[in-house]
Amino acid sequence: MSSPLHPRPGDPRETLLRSAIAEFAERGEAGARTDAIARAAGVNKALLHYYFGTKQALYAAALDAILVGLKEYYLGILAGPGSAGSRILRYVRANFDRMASSRDYARVLGHEMMRARSGESASLPHMAQSYFGPLHARVCEILQEGIRSGEFRRLDPAQTALSLTGANVFYFIAAPVLAEMTDRDPREPDMLRLRRAAILDHAAALLFEDREAGRVLARLLLEAPPDLPPDLNEGTRPSRDTASQP
Image: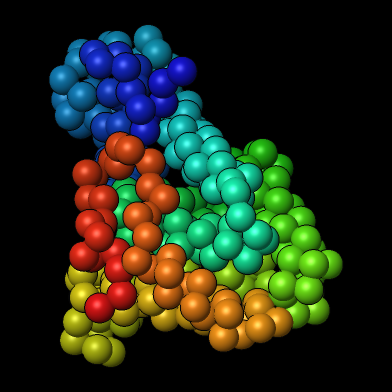
């Protein structure tokens, strides 16, 4: 099965979805133009309407494409080998790497969160029930597993899951403010390396009963190959140099 992350060569529907994601990331749903999407995809605008009907339906399909890919990606990491601590730290690392590497995906979701805050998101219930809810529940299950085994401190799993994800989300949402504060682009490779190392170190210090063992594991993960899908929308997979501790 293909997806916008792994398209079939020459598949016009998925080429349109990729072009739509880029346009919605730049302009949001209200400002996006279907003729620009069709032109970027190299197809006739009539084909866009054939596959998706309306711009609103195309936007919903683009959101689904992003969220299906993210859910499968993160759940795959959480179902991987190793202790609860290893899997949670890999999830934290992957969440950071995904936002750092796929700016269009993060921006589309950011636009939708803004719409949700103003009560304009028709997609919010579906997103919560089909994607964010199951992923949050799985993270909480693994946190409970780590608490039962004694690897993690006794924490509130629901609040801890929010903290682990929220630390990453805040960094990228607040990037314009951080740039003004530091006179540096938070997405520069050196800044991303520093933040990536800090996020993993903070997560380990928060979670592990044996804090030093957790921080050792976090440092090992900094040097390991990143858990990224083989095809990113912008083609900006971090290298071992940009993804590891300076």
